[in-house]
Length: 440
Image (cartoon, rainbow, N blue to C red; front, side, top):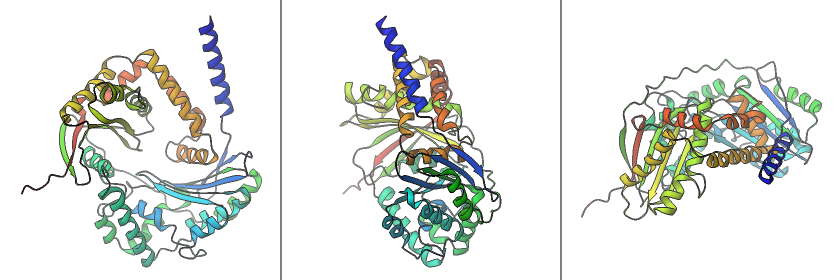
């Protein structure tokens, strides 16, 4: 009786918490195609102004990779009304913070200000969209910045080449085969006309969503949005028709040498569906089941119990057209990589053939409930979720209902999805090795 009462109380608490977490918003389109989402939260005097453009590393032509990431930097250079190098000074001197990030599928810019500086945030983003100054000096400056970032984060960082290695081995035709940051030879070969044409194609209102979240007055904000963004001309429609990949049907094994490491890594890489597909949600749950936390299956077995691995992880790397699923381990001492591969494969095979326990299933559900609540716990997080859900998933309301997808996943479905995508004949085995030292 006590157990039943506890379960009922837990359920009621969970429902009350999630109802309290429901995000209210209003969305509409301007005549130029800019989608606008407003979320009012007067609990603190702050406001986030953000713009997500539907352009990322995959949006390029052969020989011109890395443009979206370059623009992440370039569009802070200055505008018709903002002097070169003054952007961050304007933001910080008015009590704000800002940043930007780029993936293979989108670029996201945002500012967080005291709410009395809402208009400043709108002006900054409208300037970025309408009046960017793109000249040879700025392009040259930011290419050098990107080259230094590539050296720091990829070329000279231990295991920094893992993502590029995944991409080049899981894709042959799709632009995901190339790294988001691009190849330096492509950026160095780019002309000013190439860069300007890229801006005119992708950084237009009809390829963007504007999200304003925080301590705002809805009616006043709508007026400001119209004033600052309404006059921006609509761009040409952006069309995408990337080549489809041929399914992987035969296991391959590749080797990559990284001069920055001393400990090798063994990895199993699978090409999986884009993040909008229901199966992608199930794969999220499988990765959490396998390696999230010290009680997860791979960690407890290979790190704690058998002392074979220093580290082990399973990751569903989300992308719009195809995702990448990667399971990897670092060996303890002289543990052979083949042993790590065998042990990881054994746990993946169990997920494919036997339903996970009811206890593990409930733990998974609890983790995703917590993740859902935490993602909507700040205005900044809400702004990002609203932009992503509209732009990439085509459904803004996912911010309130995505948890229902995870709740509806069954134990049998977890087994079925693992069996569908995580088979040995559908993967690439990656031996990620220290660079061989030349013999004397």
